[in-house]
Image (cartoon, rainbow, N blue to C red):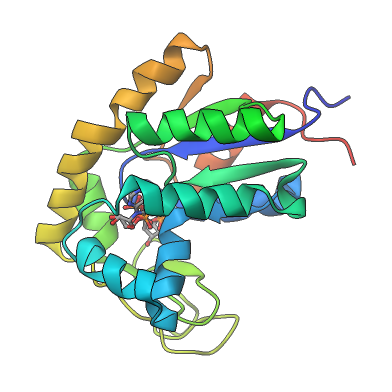
Length: 224
Ligand code: AP5
């Protein structure tokens, strides 16, 4: 029997810890959407919207986009019908103010946060991982040149499109993102620890090992 009526999860962890990779698998397993503020912002950039133009320079420096912009994006996304049974939040919240906004949104929608999964990976491994990350500009699938390469080494297995490197995956920008993670995002671990929501997973395992640990920690999936 399922222990959850709905499953609202936050994936927390440093840049490159594998949040997006795991969210994709969990989304398919639990049939709940993967909501990534990073993906939403990159989509705005790709479409050349005003918001995208404003966000691009900030993202390229590895800094955080203003709270009001991401808060409003999250509010509209969580209000959609497909989020009614739960959601996997990746990249949101990112500071204490955003956590407060999320509490308000969930309360307004009559939903609760079931778990906060912390994917723990040390900084040097992060730099190594992000240097080798490539993604498909069409479907967003994420690869790694060494740990998770596409079949032919350069194009997406699903779309056949040439893979690209993210503009913020340069070493100086990665180090700035890590600095901000430790300063602004890591304090959320203590905040959610006090609410008894934290589950910490060893993110240095291979991808499948991390997935297995998360599923074990979550227990029974949602009932159909
Ligand atoms: P965002 O897109 O959220 O970036 P991030 O948090 O820095 O995380 P990443 O997407 O870089 O990494 P990931 O943990 O998803 O790892 P992945 O699975 O790809 O944000 C980008 C920017 O947008 C921010 O800097 C900010 O400017 C802005 N932004 C976003 N949200 C915001 C917010 N709420 N507020 C303000 N601004 C916001 O994996 C990484 C690599 O490792 C891949 O190549 C993968 O194949 C590989 N890999 C994954 N798992 C493993 C494993 N177990 N072993 C070996 N390799 C692995």
